[in-house]
Length: 311
Image (cartoon, rainbow, N blue to C red):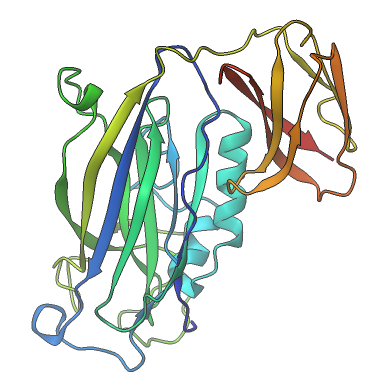
């Protein structure tokens, strides 16, 4: 267990750019609630681990209550030690399979102490990946964490906000990851074997009370009615690649830019294209092994985004 700050990386891009796709913009703010009135006692050095999560397609793809935590140890490490490496690897696997499109880790905002606030501005969410899951360790604790699981930001009513939910606030509760049998905030490590199902902390000391509130403030949404996806026959090869790639079948498309993104949304390379070439070649062999996103855009703003794996 350690002191940390919460980091959040904004949603920057989506993997699917279908014609007519709806994209919503939200501000997200969270306020933690941890006190002796509702939660019996407070440990020394009460704090929270870095908030992590993702946007994804299918419910319970990241966390599922009522069953043991996966052996890949993502949520176990978040809940027990506030370390997100395995959790991030799990999200990247989902991204690779097309079941998630954003790994989230809050950035540049202190989020320590028993009560604290954090805000995330201008977050873009695609209707193809409308579910959001967030988690943070209750620290110190044996294996306890707060979470929002598979929250759907679509309203189901296309006459309102292009089908997105309006501004709303939810209570956030604490859960036991089922991987440590400690019963106090500062209990010694006691591995639970076999693991027990992830469940709400209904007993002492949390008593099933809320530990945070989170607000999703709807800002805007758009339908890409004038910007269409570029043709599907555009090729990026080899893929997987050792680093050198070719983008072909782009003649007469008036390509203007090619941008390479990390899965965290950071621009790795931004190339301006001229003279409508029939193909483009890139040497990305200096990049680390992993998953990247390649966005090809023409002069009209039409674009396509493809996943690239570098081995």
